[in-house]
Image (tube, rainbow, N blue to C red):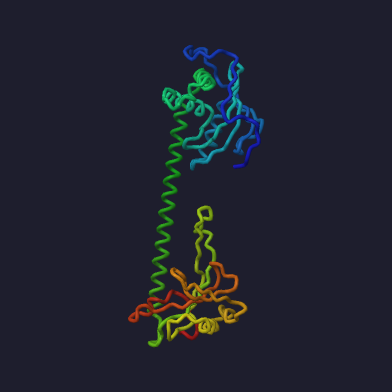
Length: 316
């Protein structure tokens, strides 16, 4: 939504040339036209004058385009049959927002009727508030039409909710299917491995990048995704030695540059919850090339510790 720079009050301002008498129904005044001072919706142009019924229809369309809680601020002045005016800001949207001018006024009126006697609602009994309620009671507004508009809004909200829930179910289903396929491929890969009896660990290189699709910077949730995994070498011991890692990098062209000490960096995280010793490219910060040693925790099934990836020549 684009910001508006319109010097209009957020609260309603009504000016009448007559004395409101709600009990005298034939004295009620009818809204005739609407002057739009400005709107966040492109459906309204500044200084356009609308027939009231046409404006209400268009306002409902704009409101129904905001089913998720958002709204389009719209500043208007409504002119009535007796020449009086009502100036206000509409927040056109579904849920608890405005569906049009009639809905705006009747919502204010109904809320006042339900709450004005409560001890903590003293502001509702102030003179300017009572004057506004008296004027709204004096307006000839179509309550049936407002109820129909609310029914449409509820229907749209429910439709969007169902679509969102269906979308989430599809996403979960897709993730579960992707995991199942990955696990199946990984199992097939592990069963194909011919790991030497003397091997106690594997030296593994992984390349990761930022996962923009599954990350949410607004909540601080940053995800990574692995785009390549290479099994560089088998190791006779479990010690995390950098010279051995650098030598293993020569076994594949993609990682050969990490053998050069000027192009790689030794990372030491030998503390509680740390990742131990591992080798990275110089600019590594959560993403990029990383070389580590993976210990075989199960001597009877060493392949279980080896992730799905590409085998360097020495491991084939």
